[in-house]
Length: 250
Ligand SMILES: Nc1ncnc2c1ncn2[C@@H]1O[C@H](COP(=O)(O)OP(=O)(O)O)[C@@H](O)[C@H]1O
Ligand SMILES: [Mg+2]
Image 1 (cartoon, rainbow, N blue to C red):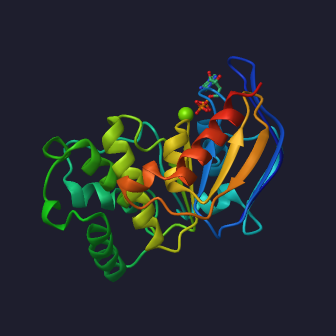
Image 2 (tube, rainbow, N blue to C red; image 1 turned 60 degrees about the vertical axis):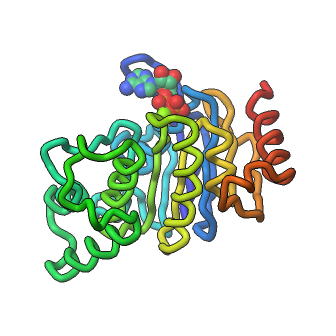
């Protein structure tokens, strides 16, 4: 469970106030999307949760513990917009990367079993010796996801993971991502400006306003979007329309 309590954050170089007394409570039971317009502070929020950025006020707790402490122990997995794979490392080496940085948090046996599990999860077992230049955009994103899961995080943060991909691939991957997350117990938060991705992936959608961001509405949905056909269902389309309306409000 994540408890964001009255946080404020300002970029000191630009004097831009991104958050002012923002509060948000996210129980871990359901995949969650944070949806908001570009520039509203989604990426900043994830960086505040990891502790890469230090909030000026308030607190962010994960299961009652300050989130930056959880991150220090490699228990937050993240795939950020700009986290690219290393071109000179193959799929396996890229997935293993988090354990090569800082202190190791797993045993050698755990390394082997986790690698096996993740390659199976992302369906790239046959490609484990391939280099990023030999993979499609969608495959690279799946490797990126596996990497963020390597140290068995207590929380997974995904920042616009499909931003660089074409629309059709994005839709497929969002469906695929949900399937993969359902095989894990890791609470996951996806931030995106894409309404479709949010509705496909999440059961709970937190809609933010422009900066300084406030929670405009929390939408719960209880239907699944598990194939392309479901993108034509009235329930899906009306949820997308509802989110769009809330996003456009000002
Ligand atoms: N390093 C930075 N220094 C100063 N301002 C920044 C920095 N990064 C982002 N901002 C500003 O903070 C606001 C929120 O940015 P960001 O969190 O990246 O938004 P989002 O991810 O929702 O598109 C934007 O107005 C952006 O220009
Ligand atoms: Mg962003």
